[in-house]
Image (tube, rainbow, N blue to C red):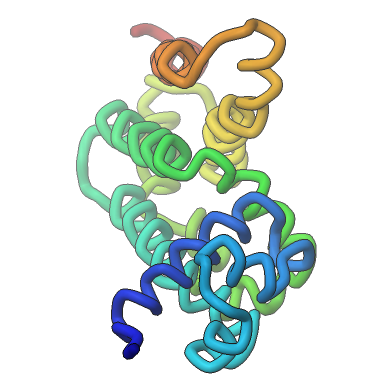
Length: 204
């Protein structure tokens, strides 16, 4: 009996993604991944050689793509309100498609920040964008309060991340299912946008 290599590799990567998101890098073993993929451990090692190689194979492209998309939004020469709306939509979509990713990111950054930055390409340039210039110009024109991207972005990201980081607790406390939680999350997204604009703009 032969093993279909592409199918086997995809099964392993999908299992790895699931387990890494649930347990983090340190809490995951190759055995966990192999059992989830219903493939023996030796075969998993044969295809991917090490847990670290499998980890970055699964997540590096996703992280880079997300960061590049965010950077592109921040650098767009578009109206500030539209830019903030696009940014919030992007962050919300990323979290909704990967509900455990907030805690996962935080754990991996805490575990090895230098390696995380090196592999993903994230840098301080995330706040050195056209957004900063826009914020300065809008402030000088008297349309918004004074704030830099360094302070604005963590406020936006942190609020959206918290919605999904507390997803399991929210569903347990309020005895709701996935569909009801997503409706709640959509309303939270609307409120985040409304609160950011109400605070930022002197007059809406």
